[in-house]
Length: 199
Image 1 (cartoon, rainbow, N blue to C red):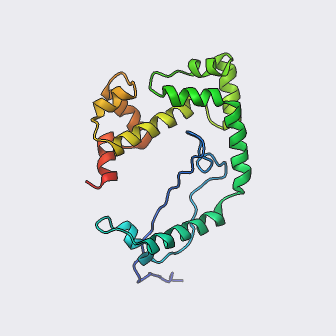
Image 2: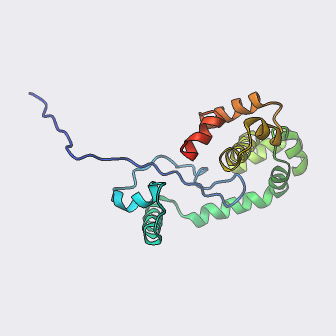
Image 3: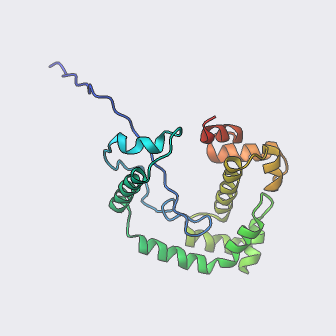
């Protein structure tokens, strides 16, 4: 038997969408959703996306409405009941409110788990166990996520140098900051800036 060769003659493109859905600082129900995985959400007409994808022209309002409508339809199809997820995150936030407040007010590379435990009112080990059980990730992972979010915002949204960003986020030096950033994002800060700014 000879296998039959099949080839698609029509060109096709794949568009990957990543969503950030952060109701609480550093806590993203979509990112922390246990069953999360890449999902094929369906075909789409490329012409609906062109106005949005081409940076040299502004998207018209009706094009943006089409894109938003399509995305909302896809999300409604694949997401679990959002109310349940939000309710759980609100309970978690209430329980650890002093910790989240400390992180937002004192975010930096020198913030320690012991500082977070002190804000929570327990020893570091007891805090780590309680935090991990409630949120699904360790205090260190949460701290790194928030630090990385702040770093990415400064890299993309400002003209600060890597050294200045490292200083602002209280890293010991620019090398340590760059190493942290690359570990979190898979790319150095300068490359990240070029990629997202298109230059």
